[in-house]
Image (cartoon, rainbow, N blue to C red; front, side):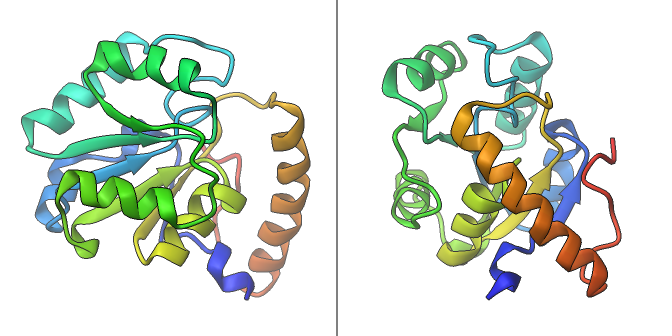
Length: 174
């Protein structure tokens, strides 16, 4: 059961998710989390670096859909200036929002990756929906109340994976 929390890849940040590499692997769509994946959870707008990352994905023909458990106002405010499609109140890790995002992009399962900073929502949900998952290091170490609780569970799962030899990287690798 704990293997459902195991990401296919781990990278330091969203900027290490390279559009050329994705394209070479046949990936045409990215489902990404918002808070602590694209920007810090308490930052409203996309940074210039994030705008550039979205543009690079677009230049390579890769669609990006933001899937967040956050409220509509937060996700919409962030997504609209990027002209990015989004799903709010996603109820991750339930697979429904991941599948909806893929269908909106009109892609097959093998053409999509899920990127996020949390094992309990992004990785678990992406794995349960059958997608390739990429875990990134959270942008900031502070979190909302529910996420703080999730991080405690996440640390235990990561420690178990490390002891079992399933992962060799450290969560803080940047």
